[in-house]
Amino acid sequence: MGGCGAGRTGRAGGARGRGRVFGLILAGPLLMGLGGCGGNRVQDPLLVRGSTEAAAIPTVSVERTYAPARAYGLPDSIVAYGAPDTPVYRDRPLDENLRGSVELADYVRGLDRAGLLPLLREAGPFTVFAVPNDPMEDLAPGRSGGVPALPVDTLRRTLGYTLVRGAYPEPVLRAMIAAAPGHRVGLRTVDGAVLLVWAEAGTGQVLLGNGGGQVNRLWVRGVPQSNGVLYLTQSVLSPPS
Image (cartoon, rainbow, N blue to C red; front, side, top):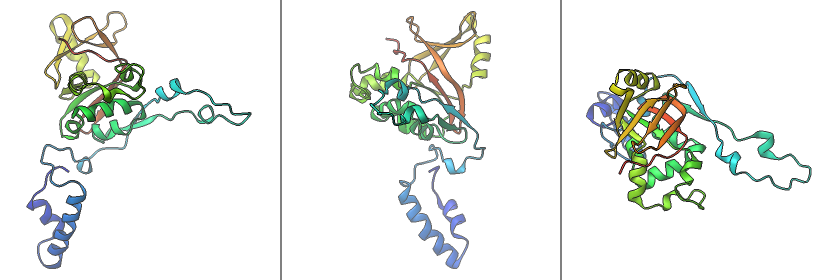
């Protein structure tokens, strides 16, 4: 959780007598169950003060890959009920919301194998340009959900290019673009490369690019998180060589 220490145990256990003994007995199992002291850098979702307001991430990859069964006149469940949207709670940390989204399952598996997922448990803030299942699976053609089969170094560099330190909601990005020379902004990603951001002429849509001609569009725009901001994109950007 968000750090451990004598002060926290003292509050839980009281000042004297049975209160102190109870606090020490309670704190030990809790810390063991939560994996011990994570340090002050770890986001503590239980200490976040906010609302339960949520945005919704559509679950489109399930519908695209679904093949109707021979139902023999019985109701087809996916037609009857559909694939539900995933709520993304604004007062929860990035790693929790990412892991809860069906549409980001391959992205989360990739982050985990690349060793980048623990980063999003930290207090941050971070801005995440997450990649949905369909474009993630294009990284490993012919293998549904096979993204973790990519070499770890390739995966780490590619997915590290989707993570930026700092909170950049869309209004902030637009203000930075308007003020920048040439109206292009460079964001330093956690892999050290620069992610370019600008507004498309005519539509005004915010675009992402790698400086080599490859462009990525946003799908879900700038959902606030307790430790940053979450976007969903429409494709995968290759990091600049």
